[in-house]
Length: 594
Ligand code: F6R
Image (cartoon, rainbow, N blue to C red):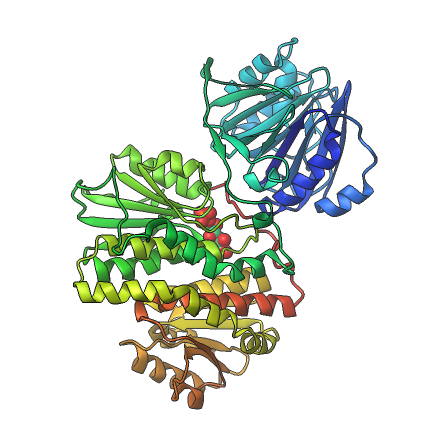
């Protein structure tokens, strides 16, 4: 949940660490800090964002250093709880992402042995344990310390008297960026793209020694080779490119994301995803699991599978699947995760694998932990998504689901051909939604004055209502709820009235008449109503207070255009309310805790 960075080379570490931390803020941003070593360790940290920290910071000279941006789990955001954390003599500094589940016991024991603690964090036990075992061999001391530790970690260890960094990983992501007589360590690729695109992904159990010109990695005491990957994202991909926020840039990238994701699979005239390792295994049912926005893609996936494959589909929130639920034989599990690092989904995937399940993963981040657990991975091509609120990764997930299910479809050739055409037209249709920003902005201004909003949809657009509500609440802090349109009268009607606007997603399919009836019922209860409807609907204009038009598409693809309109609605509403759009309070991009 936090971001960590390390640098070792021939340049001053301070500015590299700070600029890389700025790129990691989406992982956590309630406090941050760095430590730089040159014979002694100097630490500077506070409960502020990276920019004010950098402005207030004195010059810390040295060419080896570590940094951290925090999303608090143990102890409130404060200077004392910010990382790096040090041992008693300030000779060892550590940055950590993850959770040490047995820290309480370890801390008590270390205190009884004379160690002084200055924070409430779980992390602080790590430098003290290393101090306890350090007798000149830092790597060995880290290894021994980690044997005592339970939980998850990605750590970088800096010692005053050493010209190396020690890194270790278990259940939290960590990469090494390879430079020219310099090396980088980070939680994620965007942190180091300014300096290198050559990356090694560490695996669970790896402990590495990194100097400016050497990288040695061991697992269970044996040296291991980890493959070097070339990152194809450019620095510009991970920057704002003139947009005010990453979220707006990422929303506007969606026509390209659709082209890139389909381009990966859709050069052929027929849908052609090859489930090489899973095919022929006799798939009788499908279980889709995910969290948050990816869960909404999973729910839409259910409708797609049922229409195209006509086999039963179960959709589960990954964190729920961890505590209950049997997996029948013959079930293919599809795990959907943008980051590939979400703790809940990793745990669910491991559980499925543990009972002999086959897991296909749909992931955006190449080399992420989920891809190493899955039997097979299909990558979305959304590029780096920096804004905490997921937008383009969601649309890319839908594209993979459409293409995958079309590959195995049982519908007739004519229907399939018309769907293919529909998919090819999708980037242009999405562009039309993006070109309709003025109308969406007008509705956003109106919505920004309210504190409670309902989103309703039916059928394949019910999950879109859930996603519209999630997007609005997370970035504008307006309380929003998504409902199946038919459910409002079973309780939520009690809340309707002039203070509770409703956004109705109206699609030209078999749900249309029922939606019109629902809209009339809502209007009769006095709620302001904004409809999302296709161009030239005609009827809606008379019923709704305002209409955001979206282009006509095949109903199965309507979640794409509808969601993008709702992403923009959430964005402009949050902007109108002056919210920190890319970094909403209490949230982080990659949720690596359960
Ligand atoms: C909401 C959002 C989150 C994520 C969720 C799962 O905008 O971004 O709800 O969708 O944390 O993350 P991934 O897809 O990385 O597993």
